Length: 164
Figure (spheres, rainbow, N blue to C red):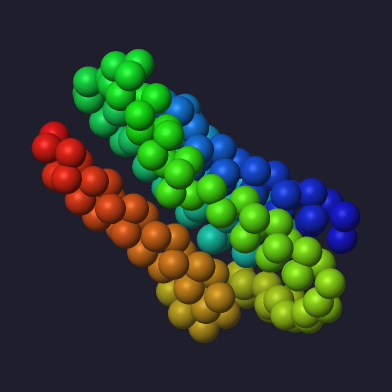
């Protein structure tokens, strides 16, 4: 049980590193690390197929696309970076407080989710496993995909607002 809490703490810290990194390249690398830690969690939940998808697609392919896209952009000047960081800190100063409150609240509440899902049967194909045995994994993948889509929409909206 302690190892699960340590892995979850590493996941939260790497996600915060992803969001609060000063450079986009570091943020892309942190996103790959966050995805790798998430795949460890998925694997520990007895979902190796979903863990392999997470590791190969999110930590691998998407990170390569992000790093290559970042390398094609022009970097900000030091003044622009400082202005951007001040604006970000002024908008999101309350997030660590919410995170700490949620961590305290969740540590006090005993929740039994009973996520011991049945292991995939080897004689069935992957479609049966995904749609009938691994519905929780599939929902997690859909949520991750939607979160990425919303992040891209917000990024383009912010870029359009700044005139880039």
